[in-house]
Every structure is written in structure tokens, then in C-alpha cells.
Length: 394
Length: 223
Ligand SMILES: Nc1ncnc2c1ncn2[C@@H]1O[C@H](COP(=O)(O)OP(=O)(O)OP(=O)(O)O)[C@@H](O)[C@H]1O
Ligand SMILES: [Mg+2]
Image (cartoon, helix red, strand yellow):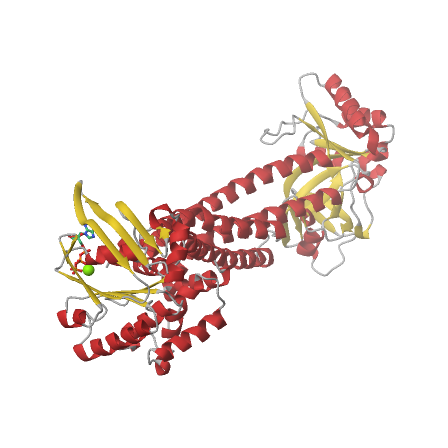
């Protein structure tokens, strides 16, 4: 029929049982809201990670011991500064190679203290990664070669230890050893879940002495040429494997890191969305159930409509529209709820969330589909009712 | 002129828990255009079953049934629905009005299935309600109407499509005799305009007003 009339009748039927309609919708509302919110959080996190990995600088090769795949346990590094020198020779430019040895240490200045991530590094770090100073100067080659006890502070550490005072030239201790502050980084925020304003950079040699080791954790290379980045990575890995035959090494690019992280996030988002989808399914079963009840309640009405000339299809359409109206209204409410949840999470928690049109459209489409799928059996049952039998029911 | 209905040796049996219940056992009947026919008989004699067949709500188990010259047994469910809509008006003993719907929209309901727009439906329904003397009750819902008024609404609904055959199964059964009289008067005035009227009644006096009477017993017409 006469679709406008069918909509009117469906709407009327839902209005007549407001509370029941609302409760029936609830399953769909929650399912759709969960899908929208979870996809938003997944997308937001992914975008954030992409920005941050790209923010590290371009043409970056990270060299670490072990294999970098999702789920591989970190391997302890056998690398030393001599390996870094060997890698520099492969690259052909020492200023393109950075190393790191990291350790969590308590830092103190006067009565104030903080827990910071001490990073033993070369003076090349700012030219490999994107790091800019707010004040003072960075480490020099001489600082590194003599193991001088000087430190460059992350913005957060500087604020905690020195407040509004200028930290440059002041004394502090790292793990109980005295250092002199020579520089402060610009505020960075988080990167890959690490608070980078909590870093303290010191010469790698000084860090090694403090930690009583001559190892380094890993190194990073800014490749001179994007096209040959894979070849360079292979050469570096070959050199390192030569020097440490018992250890696997990996050289990964930003794209590969993004790929691995993206895979993990994708699987995670998918699993969460699937769980949310199950609640949508349960909601659909509820719709089916209530529609069967509705058909039974309105058997007489169906008989009467048929007696005055409704075709089976007219009756079927009416009930199918009722189911679809139920689930799409639930879908719209769920979309709003999911979007609101995502915005609140994004605004009030450190978890980022980005709403995507496709997830909203998908959720709405799925809720309409749920209405059709779970409404079709009750609708067919209504359409096939024998008018005489229907009119006789009490 | 084609007879409104021609039934030839029509039977209708129901299956009930494996038993066969013969409700009609071979009924032949012709309703001419403009007829005024009363069907009487004891309870369970098959009157309602026959009415449902005459109105195309049901199909015969055997025999042939022509409504407006068309063989009901050969029609698809859709064609039968359209036939009901275009040629039959049904009035039920228990009115069968939609509860949440106004008198006007109840009357307009058959026009929905003709694809007629709401404005036009309401206009025609208003005319019909005026015709049955309910112009002042147009916006009332069934629970705001008396039994007699509800039956008038049901009659208006049966007439709104301009049917050639009006079937009324005990239309006065639920009404007091004065109200019943006015309903009968209404039906008779419609008959006078050329609509064939078939009504089922238990009331001998009511039956006596018809042009023809048919007595049913045990699923057969008693001559
Ligand atoms: N759906 C059904 N299933 C089984 N038997 C039925 C069914 N409908 C009617 N019958 C039987 O068919 C017979 C005729 O019923 P019908 O309703 O036509 O009688 P009636 O003459 O209208 O009676 P009343 O005057 O009480 O309305 C009855 O014996 C009844 O029990
Ligand atoms: Mg009866």
C-alpha cells in the first residue's frame, strides 16, 4: 500500500504502547551506542598513534634486538656503543644515528623529587628525532665522549623539580648521582602511551656508568633516502648479526610500526565491536518477540482489515514497518548516545575518540536491517492470518 | 444483470483435532442485485459460515461460488481481497471497530486499501457518517459511542466503498429493540437504493420484513 498510511499505523501502534516500545528498543539502543562509541575510541586511538609516530620524524629506522611483531616478547640487548659506531659506518653519517639506554630513576633537586625516564643518548638525538628545546642547550659530542654529568629535562620534570625557577645551571641528582641541568625540552605531551615530558636526557656514557653497564637498548637511524630505507635496514641488521651471531635484530620503519599497532588496534576494535554487535542481536530477538505479541494482540484488527480489503502484503508491510520503526528509532537514539559517550570519553578521559560517519551510518543501517530480519517472521505470520479465524479470536 | 452471488452445491467443512466438522453440506443460493434476504436458523446451523463465503472472506471446500460473476475458488488471495474491497460491505454483530481510531477514520479504513489519500477518505467518511445520522460523532472513538452508534459507524464503513452487496451477520443482536429497529430502517433505506442486503437474524419479526427468507438447518437450506 499506501506507504504513508502504513507508517502512520505503525507509528500509532508504537505510541499506543510507549513504555513497551521503549523497553524493546533498549537492546538496540545499547548495541548501536556501544558500536558507535567503541569504533570512535578505536579510531581516535589509531589517529593519535599515527600522528605521534609520524611526529617522530620522517625516514626513521628503529633498530632493536629481537623480532618486532605483535606479541613478541622484548629481548635484552647485547648491543654496545661499538655496535653504534659500526652502524654509523654503514650509514656513512654519524649524525644520523641515535642510541638509547633507558631506565626509570628518581630525580631530585633540593627537597623536590620525581620519577623520570632517564635516557642515555648521543648528542645526535635532536637531528634524528624531532626534539626542540625550550631553553638552554642540548648535549654535545664532548659531553658524550667524556661522560659529563649534564642533563636535559623534559618540560614536566623541569616543572616538578624547579617550579617557575629557571633550571639552567642548577644541580640535581639522578639515582643519587649529581648532574647539572643544561637544557629543557619543549612541552610534548604523550607519545605511544609514554609521557615524554617525563624524560631526562643524559650522555649515554654517563648513563652507562650510573647503571654499571656498557650496553645500549637500541638505536635509531634517520635514513638519507626514503627509497633505500629497506636496503639500509637490511644492511644494518646484517652488520649487527655479524657482530652478535646469537641474536636476531629487526630494523623497522614508521610504516611497519604503524602497521603492527594498527593490526593490534584493529583486532581489538573488531572484537569489542563484535561483542557490541551481540547485544544488537539480542535486541533484535527482543523486537521479534514483541512483534509476535503485537500480532497476537491485534489479531482481530488484522481480521477486520482483511475483511475490508487489505491484501496479505498490506498487513505484512504494516508490521514490518512497525518493527523497522522500532529498531531505527532505537538506532538513532543509540547513535546519539554512542556519539555523546565518545565525546565525553574524549573530553574527560585520556582516551581519545573520533566519531566517524561510516560507523554511524553502519550502525543505523544495521539497526534497520535488524528490524527487517527480526520483523519479517511476525509480519509474515500476520499477513497469512485467515480473516475468519482472526475475526473470531477474542 | 449478473447476480450478486451464485452459490452452487457449496460445502464447507472444518478440520478440528482430526475430526471433520461439516458446517455447510451443499448449499445452492442466488442473490440478485437489489435483493433483501434474511437467513434464519438455529445456532450452529451454518449461517455465519455461509455469510463468510458470500462475502469472500472464506472459500468453499467444494462446489462453486461466484461473486459478481467471478469464481472465488479461482481467485488469488490478492484478487479476493480486492473483490471484498470493491463489491462487499460487511456488518458484524460485534461491530469490530478499531479501538484507538475515530469514527471518521474507522469509516475511511476500507478506502486505505484502495490507495485513496487521507483527505479524500475523510471527506467521504464524513459524508457516510452524515448519511447514518452520526455527523455530530465524527471525532469520537468507539468507547465514546453507544452500541447503536457503533453499529451505525460499522454500517457507514461497510457502505463507504459503494458496495453492491451488504452482508450483516446479526447486526441487531447486541442492541435493544428500538435501536435495532432504527438500524433495520437504515438497512432497508439502503436496499431501496439498490444495494442487495443479506442479513442473518434469530428474530422472526426481523426476518419477516425481508423480501425473502431462507431457513437453515444442519448446514443445509430447508425448502
Ligand atoms: N473454525 C471452526 N472450526 C471448527 N468448526 C467450526 C468453525 N467455525 C464454525 N464451526 C462449526 O460449524 C458449524 C456452523 O457454525 P456457524 O458459526 O456458521 O453457525 P451459526 O449458524 O452462525 O450459529 P450462531 O447462530 O450461533 O451464530 C458449527 O457447528 C460450528 O461449531
Ligand atoms: Mg453465527
